[in-house]
Structures are given as structure tokens and as C-alpha cells.
Amino acid sequence: MNRRRIQVFFGGLLIVIGLLLLLANIRLVSMAELWPVFVLACALAFWLGFFMNTKEYGLLMPAGVLTVVGLLFLYCALTGWDQMVYLWPVFLFAPALGFFLMYFLGPHESGLLVPGTILSICGVIFLSFTGWGGQLWPVLLILVGILLLFVKKKKPDQRSENNSRQ
Image (cartoon, rainbow, N blue to C red):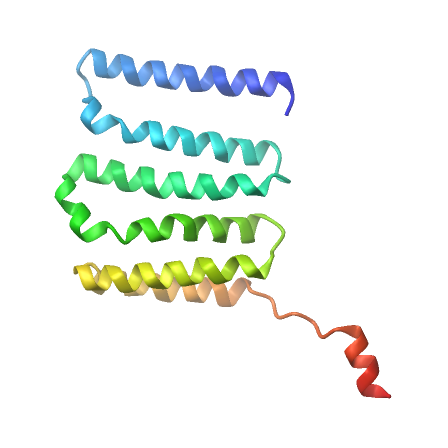
């Protein structure tokens, strides 16, 4: 990453942080509701880092985790923390999203799909136990459908084909 990109990134980040703190100081927003935006800003930093150098696909794991956690915290800060009693399984979706992002935007290593799928299924199952499941089963169907569309079947190894012909 060149020096100018780093300057632009950190300059923009400081401006956003300054604006948020200014809004809190003049009482347009409350820091009690605003602090999750800083978690999302950290997520944005990882997203930008990845898009500046797409070979660094390892940045997608913290980007996905911080995005899910930041959005969950923002939702709870705005609607009430009592929702966390029902929403705690969403924490399982955070690393799941990271694994899926690393697969789809990275080198397509099929080993990344296994933990992402397991964590997603566990999250949906646990959400069903908390009372949110009836609303989220369609999400599980969508995720499975996406996996079926994007997972490619491996071609047979050339050597095994040649051995079977002999």
C-alpha cells in the first residue's frame, strides 16, 4: 500500500471520528447509542485494507467479524440491550461470515466453507431456541441455496482417469 493511500485512509477516518464526536458534544446523538459506530469503523478499515490489496484476503475475517458484531451492538444500542437475550447466537454468524468472505473473495479454498456452514447452522438452530428461529429459517434456506450455487464440484484427477483407462 503506498503512502498516499495510507494518508487518505487515515485522514478520512479522523474526519469521520471527529464528526461523530462533534455530534455527540453538541448533543445531536448520544455516545450511549453511538459507540458501536466505532466498531463498524474498525470493520471498515479492514474492508478498505482488503480492497486496496485483494491478495490480503486474511483481512476479510476481522472485517466480517467486526461488521456483524458492530451491527448487532448498534441494533441493541438503538432498540435496547434486553434483545441480547434472544440475539446472542448472532455472535456465531460473525466468524461464519468471515469464513464465507475468505472463500468467495479469496482463493476459493473449500476448507473455508466447512466451518462457515457449521457456525451458520448452529447460529440458526440456537436462534430457533431463543424464539427468533421461526423468522430466520428462510435465511438458512437462502444460505444453503447460495452454497449450492457457488460451490463447484472438483474435477477428477487426471492420473486416476488415466489409470482407469489402462
